[in-house]
Length: 224
Image (cartoon, rainbow, N blue to C red; front, side):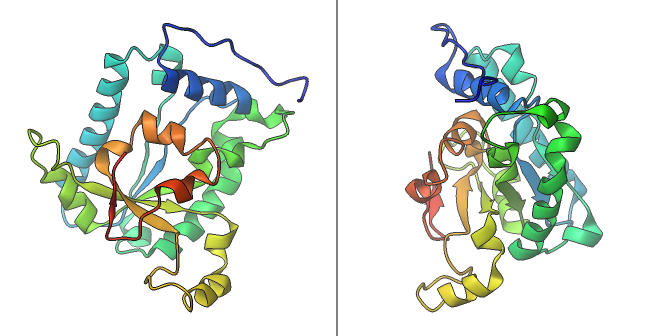
């Protein structure tokens, strides 16, 4: 264990998920957590504004109700990316290329304290820099048109993984010979919209293998 690693004592009055996120922030010397969400449909700006409102209000209400400490709640940042020229109708592979380039420099730019991190794990292992959310027209409509009074009608988004194996197009093409999926394997999944929140974010940061524990081939919907 590195001498610079900070071990925080659990606090019995703090939600376990909040404790986990707080521990990760301290471990990586990060000041923000949360995923990047790419807007890939530009038919209606009001729908996109409403989508952002739903995601932000739902997650922040949940943290408030469960007593998340300000250190954790105030460091949440869902990064909404909107650029019609670059992302209108963009494929997952196109998004991966952009996200990969962004993640390569993002930690230095947005997590300044991490520059002198001497732990044996790098910030790029954080779930903020491994996964992102794709919001295409179907996903957008499913969320903004959902019935808020129906817990089973909340919509979905696409969680996309971006690691070396996902960026290797030749390898993924070979994988298509062995799997019956249009996207060439386990590189993305449809998740219930409420999973863009602290609980699923926390669990996806526990180990890379966690992906396979939740994975279901689209159009199967993952609910956690």
